[in-house]
Amino acid sequence: MKITLNNNIEVIETSEDRLTINQLLQIKKYSFKNLVVKINGELVKRDSYDQAKFKEGDKVDVIHMISGG
Image (tube, rainbow, N blue to C red; front, side, top):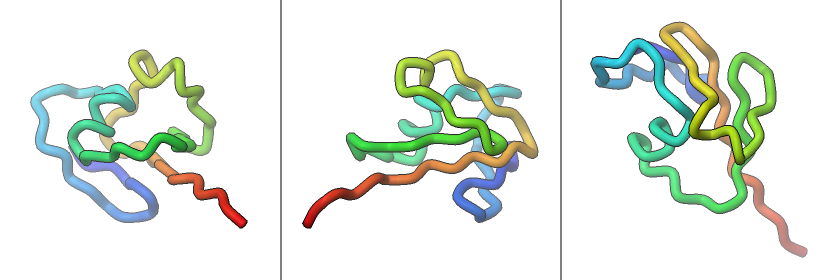
């Protein structure tokens, strides 16, 4: 599956035609606590990561939020 992930073309090896955000986070080994995720520009709420799916050609943004002072 070829997607645009954080403005980079990524090929994800899978037999699925759609993946959930949680599956992507596991595949990419993203373990940050404070993430903002968008699929094709639409915000995905954290409690929807198991249901929100993307497909070939979609644009996915996974942004790690950092706070501090």
